Each structure stands twice: as structure tokens, then as C-alpha cells.
Image (cartoon, rainbow, N blue to C red):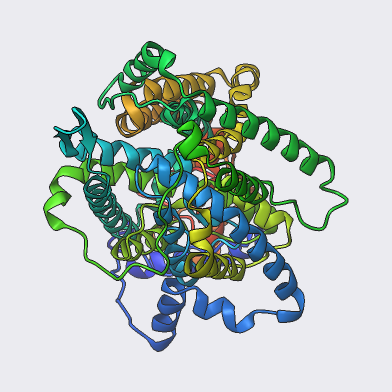
Length: 572
């Protein structure tokens, strides 16, 4: 009858609150469960909301120039130099001109500086995102739509300018829509979905997407032009087509690719060997781009050997143009997949650095920051971005401590775009493909997860393998949806097993002594030996869900006690 005895309940609540505060440092809900809270809008709450929505306002005034400026400067310059070849290379993955990779390395970085909460991730172009965009652009703007017959040469000619213009429109539209999806998901507090994006799922998915990246660049390595396939099993069809036309390989292009790959591997190994002796890593990609550009210009690789080069790179920035709304209906599914993939990669890497350096990354604010970066960048002709593991590791290892390093890298890209970009017009596309191959070596090492997961948790190994297979066979967009569905089924199944085995659901007399009287006087209530239980599991995905629950409970320090059935169910 405690519902009708409000005074008695309040007296008990006060005593229970006092005991739990002294013994366990836990504070109960200050109001009875049946009392409605009032929505107050005070100045302090408004300020807190503003600081949470625009994080730069809270941390930039406290920025320590003495402690952070030098590290951020060196880190920003190093990452900016690294962004140049990667941005141009990943633009090829997106099937747009290379200069648009530089744009995508500038505008979104500035927006993330204002709204992002991770101090160490390097936002910009990313291989997995680029290959997903490339699938959309080549599907909606295939080369066959821009092919005309030349009666003079009796051969077909591709209108490259019109093709690139249409593909840019498609890439911008899908990027803008994916940004809107991320903003909307952030506003509705969708950040909890990261609990279900377990490490095996993310790593299996990125490994499968890396296979798509490699296959998409084979045409630049061999100098061939296979037809584009879309839909499930398109990767298999593409590989078969490449094997069929491989006798048409351009020998000059293949030689450039092999020499570049070997040189990059040796240079990176030397870089790793000298990492402890050098203050900053050697920018091997930039050195490779400069050397091959000079050789291509002096030897005239295009005219003498038919090696395909980057071509015209316009100087300056693009004027703002609103994306074509007529394309939104055709790319809505791809946009949602891009939104989830970009967020999952960024928040996974961001939480690794946050755990290492002891700060918190707001998952919902990260969604909003990435969404604003994509939607605002799309207006300036950028394609979808996320964070790169290789650049993030360089940013951390060279001393980067705050988001200021990202802004400085954007300044480097701006300088290159305005004044130096035209110097790279003779850069062979095979070199950019080689840079992509070498930068994927970290992702390809994730195959070693399989034997490790076999020893630790075989269910997570199954998630990894199934995610990889689905991504390879169904393409990154459909593969992601199917993988998330499979992973959630395994999490739900294991959660039910653990709850049934480990949840504490005991009658009151077994763990505490309670004397109940009709008047429920405060002197007659005591709680002793309050115990909290932790679910124990070796599964990384289950640990992530568990840590999320524990983090929320530790933050609120609130436990709801339900008395009508005289039972307590505590999940810690």
C-alpha cells in the first residue's frame, strides 16, 4: 500500500538515500517515481546546452599555447602533407577528378574543428567511404551514357568533361543527404547504436571494403578499362572481367605501378625503423608523388608510353552550389549507408584515443559534427568524409593534442590547392593507386583477427567472418545492413543468455534485512550488504555493451528500486 502512503514512502526514501550515500556513494532518484518532473529552462542549463552543441566554445578559451602549440603545429603540417596524395588518390576511388579530394580535405576539417569532440582523429577522405561513393557515381553516371561515335576515327569517344560533371553532382548529392541523416540521427540521440557496432563487425567490414578498394584500382595498375558492374556479386564479375582483358595491359603503366609499390613499401619500412630517431616521420607519399611527377613530365610518359595521368587541376576553390535535389530519391539508401559507416569508423577510432588519453567522446555530438561536415562540405563540392586511421596515428605520434592540428592541416591543403596544385598535372594515376594499396596494409593485417578470435571468442569470430563475406559479396552498402542485422541477433542472443545466468534477481530477505510496519517509520528501515554484480565475458562486443551501461550508471549514480513486488533487479 505504499502508493497511497506518500508520507511513509518519502520517509523511507530519505533513509534509503542516506544509507546508500554513506555506504556506496550512490544517490537515489530525489523524487518518488510517480511524481512528474518539471521542465526548467535556466541560464545554467542553456549555457550547458550551448557548450555541448558547440564544443570549441568550451575548450578553445582554455587552450594552452605553451603546452600544445608546438605539437599541434608539427602534427598539422605532417598530416596536411600526408593529406595531399591521399586526397587525390581517394578521389579516384570516388570516380571524381583528383582535385575534389583536396576540397574534401579542407572544408569538412574546419567544420569538425568547431563541432567535434575527439582531439586526435584526422577527419578527411577515407578509402572505404570513397569506394562506396564511387559505386554510386559509376552506377548513376556510367561511362556508356557519355560515349559518342566519332566518324572520323571510326571509334567511340567518351565526353570526359560531361561525365565528370555528372559524377560530381551525384557525389555531392549523396554526401549532402548522408550529412542530413547524421544530423537527424544525432538530434534523436542515435549514438547508442555504437553499442551494436562491435569491433569484430567494424574490422570485418573495413577488411571486406578494402577488397573492393583494391579491385577498383586494378584498372589503374594495369592500364585497362573493364566495364563497371553494380549490385550483388559485382566484385566477382569485375575480377572475372579483369582476368579476361588482362592481355591488354599497358606495360608502361604496370612498370610504374610495380616500381612505386616496391619503393613505398621499402620507404615505409625505413620510416618505421627510424621512427625513434626522427622527430617526425618522413612523408614518403609526398616524396613519391613529387619524384614520379617530375619523371613523368621529363620523360613524357603519356605521349611515349600511354600512361594515364591526373590531367588538369584547376587552381582556387569551388563556389558554393546547392546539391541537386532531384537526385535525392535515387541515392537515399546509399546516403544512409554512408552515414552509418562514416560514423561507425569515426566513433570507434575516437573512443580508442579517448580511452588512451582520458577524455570523453560524445557519440551523439560526433554524429552532428560529421553530419555538418558532410552537408556543409557538399555545398562546396566535397564528397563524404570520415577519419583515417593512418593519418590519425601520424597526428598522435607527431605530438598533436587538440583539434587545432586538424585546422593547421587544412591550412596546408588550402595553400596547395591555391598555388601548387597545377604542378601535379603530370602525376600518373598508377602512382595514386599504388599509394592506396600501400596504405591498406594496416587494414589487411586485420585478417590476423581470425585466429585471435578463435582462441578468445568464437561467436565474435563468426561475426567477423560473416561480415567480411557479406561485404565482399553484397557490396559495402547491402553488406553493412546484413552484417548489422546478423551482429544484433548475436548480441541479443548472448544478452539473453547472460541475463538468465548472471542477473541478480533475489527476494529481499536473502540480501538485506527489512522490517516493515504499517506506518513505515524511518527508524525501522535498514539496508545492509548492498551488492552489485558485473557481467563477466570475454566477448569484445558484449564488453562494449557492458561498459556502456556501466559508464551511464556511474555518471548518473542513480538506481531505481521497485518495491511493489519486493524484488530488486540490478544490472551493473
